[in-house]
Length: 464
Image (cartoon, rainbow, N blue to C red; front, side):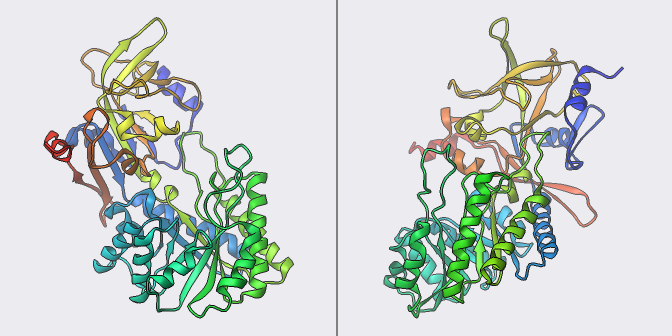
């Protein structure tokens, strides 16, 4: 007779795409035996599985190129990686192996790309989509790149005052630029219009006044991004239609305009019952852009995307051990982990982000309904929600038996939001970080990227 825990999982979920499997009572992730990793490195432990980054990039390229072929779409697709999702060297190097382009958000992003170029990972003719509100150092770094042969650095104008700043900073090379549309936010959002970009009705007058006859600039790209991501909603399709209509009207008076950037927003799996039709969404986006261009009698634009979380999110995991169990009243049973959710998974308490959570071992044990608590003394340091209930279901804790759990698809934003290498809440040390890759024979191997943070490192930061 099958045990209750396996019955629950099999009745409720299906493991997606062979990413997870259970063998001999233990969880495998991307064919990696997680208990072997734990035995070697201990917990808490952050993992990055590099091959997933490449497979995500390849998947998106196939999806968009197939969509273009089906629609007889006569332009190209360009995949950009959004660096703010994870700036780590191993992420950028793995990403750039796939010939992708880069989207930046700040001045130091440009310094990062400079190092990548010096190390042979980034070519001068790769696209750099320079987004964000630009302070003087960001402007200066962009101008230095443009004047030194990074010919496809494309500043995206966030406001009507930005253009003159490049001239003031010493720009001498003719430069491709873009304009970001200040999209209307979803009705339930606190604000009606995005704080980023230039309003729809100001874009064409601004082009005619400041760009059209300016010998230093040519308008190459219109940039469109929806904060809530690429979703099959009337709101998304309406905003996309508005952006494409602006593109078409601009194209009629600006022949050098040839690119539409639809930003990021492809989601990642945050539960085992995740259901999102990537192929349908790409095909519908391409078809709608194509149809509107035909209606306006203008050529279709090249399509740029800026996928960050989609690129790197599913490559990450973090493993904990259950160090204690506390019965706080007749209903609430707490499993205490050997770290803090607030420091290692800050999105779980900051924006109530959910991740795939599973036991790593003891799959054949009887399960129970529990809440998960972190080590800090903060009331927000807990995790108690899954797709199907407010609590989570994990194997029962028996005396003398160790229990490990894993959170999966945690590869985007957590290190930067948590203050990697800095001071963590309650001086909780940052965990070890291990990188996993696969060799030419398909065998996995591991590399320690960072040791667990030491008290000496913390005290030095604090001035002791």
